[in-house]
Image 1 (spheres, helix red, strand yellow):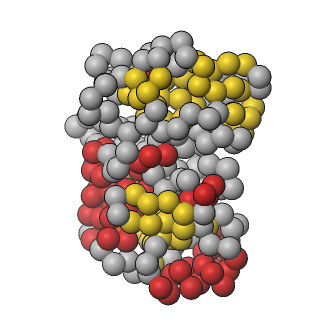
Image 2 (cartoon, helix red, strand yellow):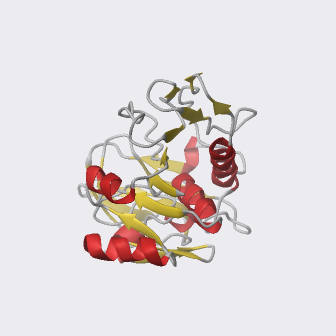
Length: 259
């Protein structure tokens, strides 16, 4: 089965990982400058570095159509393509399309018709209207719930608390601009420490902890985008590997496909 996964963040990566693990031909479609921050839990950096490993699986960004076709035939790594979506659709002819971009605050374009089965993850999807199937992605009793009709829950907008800290451990872009940073995922930072610059303005750690998420250097971010996330736990910080929530969403995608 050919599956196209839109997005390379932690949720999209978990979906692609599980499908690839089961032997399906998986292709990730991404923009040339993804702004996902949990890069230690995702395949995002394949776009910037050419390749990246996640929990024993490799993803690579091919150079041109010929290399992309070779990767799909080879099946040793997940290709991450930044080619126009129309070109990728024509090449892959996906049986399933999963929109896992998790854009949250914007309405996704019409997905039905791009593949025999289209699945939308998270807010702003309506099963039977812009996708065939929608899946809830928010923490709580509804996480992983599969909808064959109707809309998913609206965005709640509050990060999950870690040691009592939710939004207080995150930083959002005050304005649009280019982010510059030399901080790496997993680095320990102190509260108030400068970790990046946005349009020449200092971006400081709101609390002490390990950097769980930060945009890649030199990407353009929109105003309001989350650009930094701290895990305040000194021990057992969750910054690398497949996350619990992404994996639960991925299992829901597998269930929806099987059904």
